[in-house]
Image (cartoon, rainbow, N blue to C red; front, side):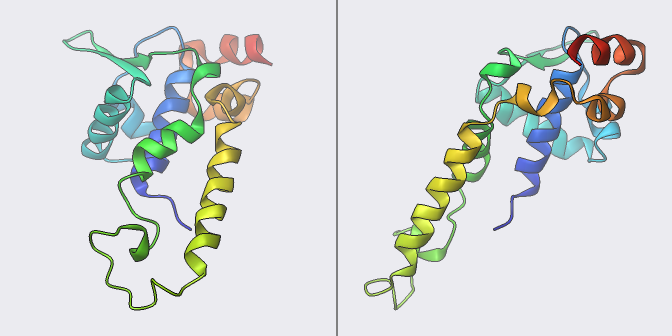
Length: 155
């Protein structure tokens, strides 16, 4: 199993916002620090906004921030937003399935249970679980002027 680049980047954007809680961050800052293209970040930000995970403020002094407290953002929910439109295997999409084994294959049921277990584990994980007390992550993602105090407050 492999996560899409969008899902990976969505996690980075959310962690960046959580580490820099209390201020608007710019998508350009996220792109630079998270080693991503500004175009990809913009697309991910739009999906995160549509999913209700972040708020965006337009204009010269605009940016983005978490729409919910980090402890209320389920990583499983985030992953579903970004991965749900991509079938895990051909047979998971009845509209495009051409697999001749579909009627007799037992693998699909096992894959379905494995995916359910995967999302169950991610549902137990909040954004706060990823960032709270994680000074290494704060050192990588915090905007310099707030890095020391944010790390100390959460440790």
